[in-house]
Length: 222
Image (cartoon, rainbow, N blue to C red; front, side, top):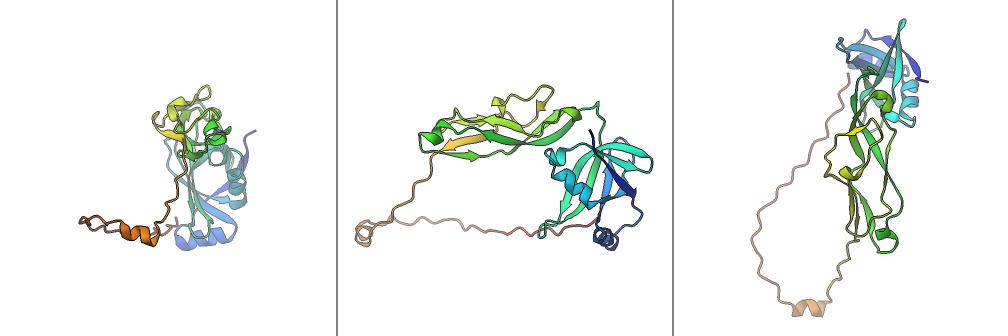
């Protein structure tokens, strides 16, 4: 059964208004989609947290009650404070249950590869989610990928994954999901007398590498 959470139309805007809303245990939100104008809302933070902690997480389809109407929605985007992990704002999108949508779903690896059990390798989990397209009711909670048959230097690619019925994978088929690799060997330092015996090769001029640090973007409150 689809969960229904209550909401209120929001008539106060700006940073100060958003702070007051969050201080009261609510969060500001905006609902988009379905060809209608965006609608500013206020949601109970506990309701949002409960949905996000469910098995389907951000891909959960739920209903928003606005006055006497109910709308099927999903989370479109979540704004979270990077320093405190506090939820600041939620964007919702209206969902038509008879129209296909695109979402990202997590990948879960199963099985222990042969290359790990008997060949001394390790699993490099390179791609942790896939973009898919399907009807809202067909969105899987996760895609299970069996890697137990992999030997050293073998991989599973997106094209090797069989999607559930009614689901189309949009991610590039050649993208590597998981690879069994050999652990890097530690370099053994030469003893002082051995190092002295080795003639160092002439140094080649190297171009100067300039590293620029990216500035952390401030969280914009809506």
